[in-house]
Amino acid sequence: MAVEPDAVTGRRSPPTDRVVQVLDHLVARPERRFGLSELARALGMSKPTCLGILTALVGGGYLTRDPEAKYGLGPALIVAGRAAQRGFAVGPIVRPHLDALAAEFGAICTASAVVGDQVMIVEVAAPSGVEAGRTVAKVGEVYPFAPPVGLMYVLWSHDEEFTRWLGREPAFPVVLDHDLLRSVVDDCRETGYLVERLTPTGRRLFSLMAGVAGRDLPAELRELVGEMVSSLGERVYLGRETSADVEYPVSLIAAPSYDADGRQALVMTLDVGGSISGAEIERRGRALVAAADAVTAEIGGRAPVR
Image: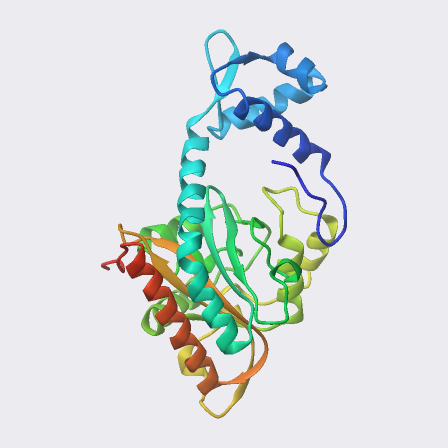
């Protein structure tokens, strides 16, 4: 679980590194349990620092503490591990569809999934002449799964999942216009895809969010929050707002694949990053939906019954 420096600032987060150290140490020794002093000594931490990390991880279910005050792996890691396994197992299935879309539209295409409390990129396909490793999105990159990040991962799922996401503590302050969000949900379910507006602020936001976990946000991101004046729902074009012969600045188009329980297994995206006509939006959206539906069929999934 090596922690990479922030892609934009080059900074590391020592507190986050220490959390990863604790988890790495225990994951490498799953059959053992450790006391506070033993862990602090093995990891070169002070006991108060180590205790604070252990207490937070126990509170989140990632570790357990037995009556003898020894710590071991907790049930939340099982849930996160299963989600990660499911996401990465689908990777080889979704990859040919992403490659075909990337070639047809000359666009970077991704597949991502919710893994625990984060959104993770599980596959990236780039058009000819662009190396996948040099793209903005990279496999393994994570984003917080909390408003305003993650709308597309609950749009097409069951209503209770959408409601739970709305109830999560926001990654940072955001305006939630519930009536507008309901319109976004209904529109995206009708068309089968989401069209995100292109704004310089939005593109910069998600560049800075890459790799950020939890609430420890870099100073640059906090400054950017002050620039975000639009509500969450206003980042999405509704179908009734677009005309075939008018051009619109589009960031990306997204569509879901489902698992056997009718839950969103993946979200596939097609990057645009420029202005295209309403007719072209529909053409790309339908192509993306067809690819996502093919993935659903190949993994034995089904669309949810609402």
